Length: 320
Image (tube, rainbow, N blue to C red):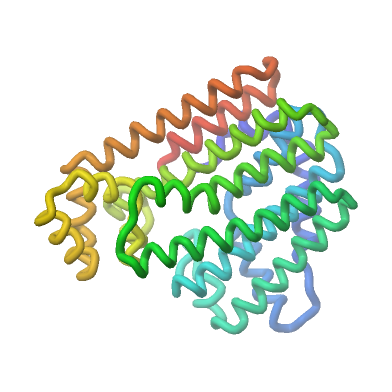
């Protein structure tokens, strides 16, 4: 499902400059890195995060050269984290393409991820903004801590709603909050209240994004158009199933535990639908959406505000 054109409209020219600069940032003459970089270019996603950086800058003030550098730095950090995550999770697919570890090998994936991470830091440094560099560095720490917390949860074979949202707050929500903060900082706006509002919006959008992805995991593959049940197969407990577990008897909990250990994916997917887990997650999703839009409405009406509203609706309503 492509991003609606209206979302990019207020930042059309800036996004074109971003794409050109981003392509230049992914460059190396190394014989091993060159095919890796080319694979990344072919499998690049919808650029959701850089778009949000640009929109937040536009909403809070103006898109500057530092906005472009910050957006590139954040996207490179995100890409590096995904490469490393795929090594940790032993994932062979990423965005419908072979993951870097699958196409090359784990060693190249780790070193390639390090190269992309270093490129992100270089891009952040080019802003000569201590505030922007701190956001990028802090995000890297948050993403690592979130991944470690998730691994701990898998090893314990236990989670709860609080821990679930705690993991999101350190991963996807932190990523989108950083988008908003970078947009604000680079826009030259210095109003603290405005910063708090825009960062809250970014954090909520990020939570919505992850929650929507987690709901997808409980659908049939042919309905979504890509493999599902991946998190379940890896033992990652997400909100739909967590809600079912928290409202089950001891005997039912034991049966679910066995199903997780035996990778009974279809059974777990059906259970989440039948026992209200999906409906509960969807309700939470819409509550979060309303919270984000309520804060957004405190900003003056503008094309950027309209675009961020459409962006939020896209995150919640997307089919993939």
